[in-house]
Length: 79
Image 1 (cartoon, rainbow, N blue to C red):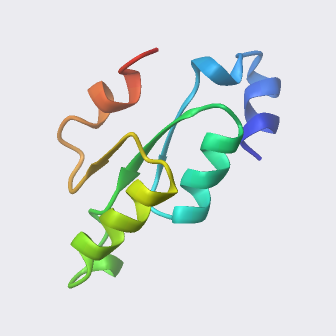
Image 2 (cartoon, helix red, strand yellow):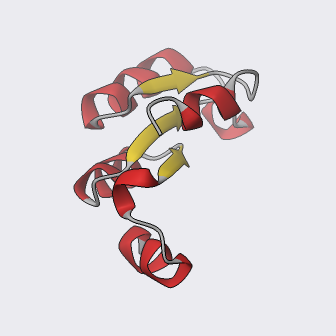
């Protein structure tokens, strides 16, 4: 899906960044050659943010943020 999006936008995957709250999404973004930033600010992660953040890091997230503060910079870092 990530490669499909990049191809249809005419952007090289290495110039793309993905914000994800799923370890599978992080792994997919990394497999596509994209920068992946984890997000654990969703209400569905209440009570398990730290454990889920560790899962996102293990899946390959470059960073994991608990809110949207700094998300723009995290996504653009290295692009």
